Length: 322
Image (cartoon, rainbow, N blue to C red; front, side, top):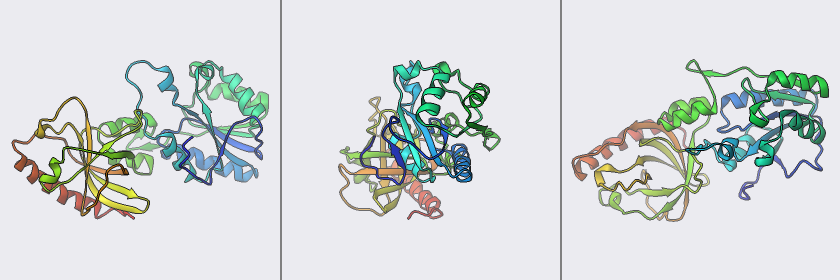
């Protein structure tokens, strides 16, 4: 659990000796904490208020697909720390993060409900999403939960899907949008800006020579998703409550012939001077300006960057930054 976060949210250290007042719970991964998640959470808060109980989110970490899948690893919209921060902003009172390991992956859905939700947590009411599955091999579903609800005496309801542009909002959809560079549409689906955090590391300083100094970012979390290649209008948080307009390039910098197979993330902060090395910057994505492109010369690249900066200023002038 990241020690840097201090929240109103009560993060339960375990489930052995903690008794909540008539808990109203939901279970899920909540990657991205998007607007469909928030619809579930809002209902959770409504029911807990109606029965004078406490709201509770039960989630798993790491994401089950990271532990179980083979092939290319899953990239996540939110790190655990980011997810906790977003959940805290919803007004939920309690969060239980269960360690997802091999033993839990082999737990049947009925054992999970009986041993954890009923016996350990004494859940009074459960709210789940429209496509909710859990337990070994995702064998638990709403129909099976209805049987267990009657058997163990807890309330149960299922929320319907939430749509944007005639598409069902899901974490999978949002991952696809971000990977494709559609950060503006992802923002609409999440209800908040997609962001990444990275530490500023030393670069080759070519940007400084052409009037566009950049901060090169290293992302510490290998499972963190970031947008597809291109140039983006972004908001840069340098320190708490210090935010600036910026434009970010993600890709291989083909004009500089530096392609060594490693993708770079570099941000130019507008109207900023100062030493940022080793600082951690938070980058929030507003919109994509264009695809990454190879130019015939450094001078042509500089001309394009000046155009990009003007477009960036126009886009970001309509955004509340502080």
